[in-house]
Amino acid sequence: MMRFEGTYNMNQVLKFGNYKGLMGKIEKNYSISCETLSKSTGITQSVLQSFQTTGQLKDIPDDDKHNLFSLLLLLDNIPESNEDQRVCSVIQVLHNFYGISLQTIALYAQLDLNQVQTFINDQTSIKLEEKYKLAVSSLFLYFVLSKRKDI
Image (cartoon, rainbow, N blue to C red; front, side, top):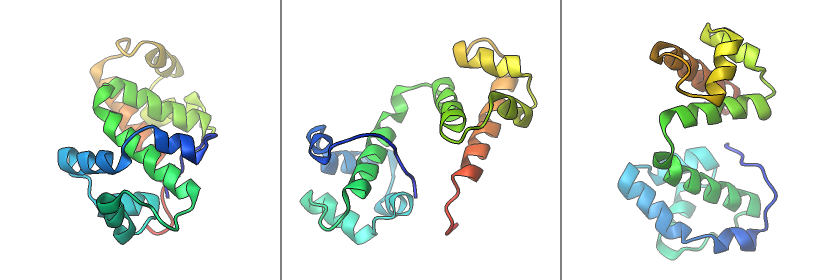
């Protein structure tokens, strides 16, 4: 299950927007289904479908609500950032959350450490082929490390 870390107050999280509407928007605009959200959050499809209809999440722990709302916000904001920014974000998660060194990421991407460090500060600094290697390696490394037990 995806986990979004941070300090929050559930009442503050609920004030940020219309999550019922946001969930509908994501389903309509990006074809992300309740089934997909269920697999990512661990919240049952029936609860998510009920949420779409009523706007209520009953008997769900605050952590699970927070994770769902964080996921919805992330999914809605993907188009706001370009591909290079997304790759940098994945590298930051690998480095900051999983403790993977930039050297390790460089080795998996078959790049020099300097190329990875430079890319983080200036996404135009490396060639398209190098960006591709870095993106694929980083995303796959993230997938492997965050893999759910039930997959």
